[in-house]
Length: 403
Image 1 (tube, rainbow, N blue to C red):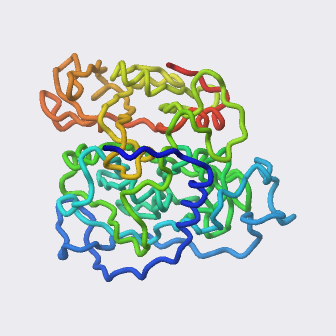
Image 2 (cartoon, rainbow, N blue to C red):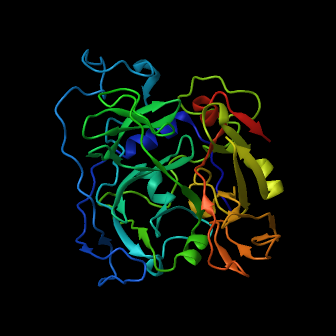
Image 3 (cartoon, rainbow, N blue to C red):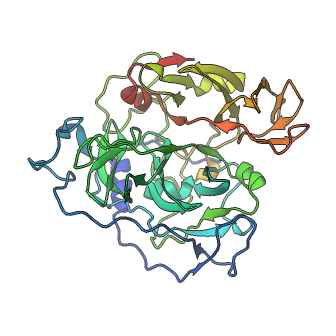
């Protein structure tokens, strides 16, 4: 039986402060090739090749108040960035990630959430049960430096290319929140970057934007089936954390208010309604997960781009019970261009997976055809974010809503 729990701000703040404890020394690891076809020479966690980051640049920092006078004008008032409890790096990012093969994973149940990121044909999984304690992983996939991020307070997962001009940035957790969202800082200039913007709003890099990479939160079973030879982020992080447990028990309870959020929530949806967010500015669109849970397939047009949203029901919440494995089901989503070789496709839910009406091929939540005439083909992913309504509407106030 699931243990009842009620989220409180005091409990959440205490959970955050726990993460400031001293990390354990990393266990020894080996390096390995990164391709899914190759196999590591050890059954233990391995370090994969990483692109070197740029050196720290001397100059003024935006991490602390008052702001130095020589910084560019900030894009948001500094006093709107508030402390979430821990100091900078009190929630430690993972900067030397270690990985194991899919076949060696023993700690995940089928419906637990993982972040699925594919770059240049190379896929990796990042269990949310690890990310919830670290929020940022600085990694390299297919030679491209990436930041894989997860904000528990906004329930938002985004991935970024860490290259900015001639720089290769690496990111830490600032300990600050903006609209309750994780504020990252780059270690090269100590500029501040709200995760849901992917843009520096205060600091020497003010106005700079990172390129986003499509990322999905999906069931472990779906990732495992799609990428049986892939790498998975290991719990061997060098830190002592209770991976697989939730330090924000009950946070997605719709009756609980968002933490340290002072904005006005538009009445179109409850503050913690789960939404799929697409586009930005005047093209921003939010689709409620409640609507998707009924339709399973929804076609929309955002900024002149035709998009299909797919919904699968069994993914568990990361923010419900103490154990992610015992949490309630909330469902997973994917956003894609519904066409192959320029030929449009129309999708429907068949009770287990998705089929297209044109060829009868069967498709997964990852936009990959599993069988039928189009077996092996993949849909082009579209950037989107699963998040709470209060967070999406705070960053996209002109958003339209489909509920």
